[in-house]
Length: 141
Image (cartoon, rainbow, N blue to C red; front, side):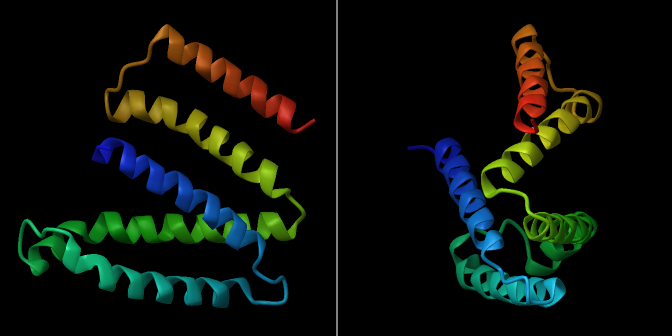
């Protein structure tokens, strides 16, 4: 299996576990404390696996090059975490929330991909978008 398939498999499995674990966080726990514990665990795991990834430049150069996107990603991830945690506490089903969110995000990213990254959009892609919109309508009924 190539990195192409391994990487998406990791993303899919991690996303599935993410939702299962999010759904199981007690509503008695402060959501921000839950995030702090989550990110402390993420730091530990990241530090443990960091030696297994090649470093193309010095640690200092890598750190400087990643500052603004990583800080912005931090804001986005906190929003993602709090959003799902609160959605599950508000009663969203695990089987619906992730699908609804992921399809909505995909629809939001289509114009961004076209405008910012000059990605291609075919008739087949257009039909897929129409199916996604139809799916969102049906899933919320």
